[in-house]
Image (cartoon, rainbow, N blue to C red; front, side, top):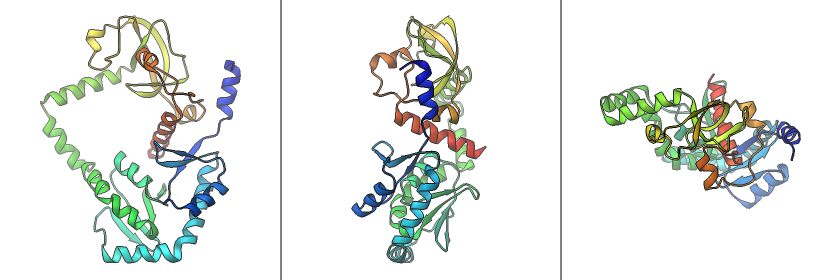
Length: 286
């Protein structure tokens, strides 16, 4: 494939959205009938649906499924909550189910995404979950609440104070200082493409902006880049934008040992999905 054809293919490639729900044959059959192009991801433990309008179509389907299950699942969820309620400042009961508002935590987000029919309300900045999904929510609540408590500003401050003056704090500061330099060691005889998202072990998916030609001294940066050798040179980078990630064509196979040692590789589909999700969350917070 030529560069022009690849760029055109990347531009034409639709974005992806994810959805998860309680498994049963009839529900999966209805889902596959509605979304014939959907694919299951073992890594994400969710279905992926391509298309610019995928999120709206998924929300409509979820609403339809909720209506289908509502007479039985909602009643069971209400009964389960009354018998063994979740008592937490992070959970609010509403007419249709629950609202969950916590400090930002990656663990909380990952757990809630796996609760069937969980939905992020971007206007109110809360997760909404129907009564029908109460069993799944209860099963994950201990992990969710612990992660939320650890993300409270006061808890973060206490951990920071506990690390003060320790080697862990010094190591964190050194790594932060290195990250601010936005540089990456790459093999001098196999340079990355400029202006296009590539995957890296140190910083995830980034865009290489330039290659200075300055030789890397491995002994000085072994703490951050253990794979760097004398044949590596410094390259500058910047974070990838959501638009760039959406239009990046994924690698057909996992990177081998050689490409990982050289410092960069073409991102896989799973890596792109994860990066797109993070970039989308960042845009929402802005």
